[in-house]
Length: 239
Image (cartoon, rainbow, N blue to C red; front, side, top):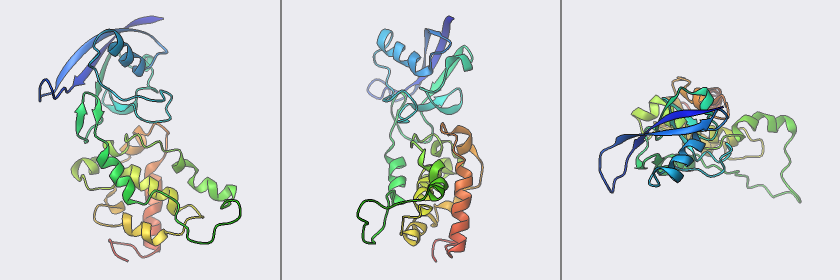
């Protein structure tokens, strides 16, 4: 069954006006269509200047993360049937807005780089591959599913107050490699996450868990990082 929804979208078009404004669009959608479908219809039939990111449209790439009715979500995963008839859409908070719903993710990805997001192992490589047992793989399985959409970090009050804070996403990436039994850069990585703006800044507010589209318990992973840091003697930025 189709019905009309009002899309109330926060606009920012720097070439026209340095201030933001709200535009409203009436869009007819069936109940199983998604917020992303509505945005595409608006762009194709009502206002071609509306700007937003999308790619896979199936919850894999994370590019369509935005604030929908007050909560960070993926537009491609959010069915209109689960929302009221007025759908309020804003860009992700706490990041610079480039245009409309597109934010500058440079800061976000720079934090990811700081935790060395790749396997480090200088031991001689085996003939075929570095084998990992199913049990060891299970330890990092949840963290591997992160799609780096930025919903968690931009919903974190600590990040709102401290833009240098690594944030939930980068810390989860650090977990993914610190608890990978094939990795050998434990101390190097712990040094990266235990500084003034690192893991100790997490206050377990759980906003990150609430908004994660992959339902990852990010706070649980950060707590495990804290325990590992204490165990290894990294309690305040230096060993």
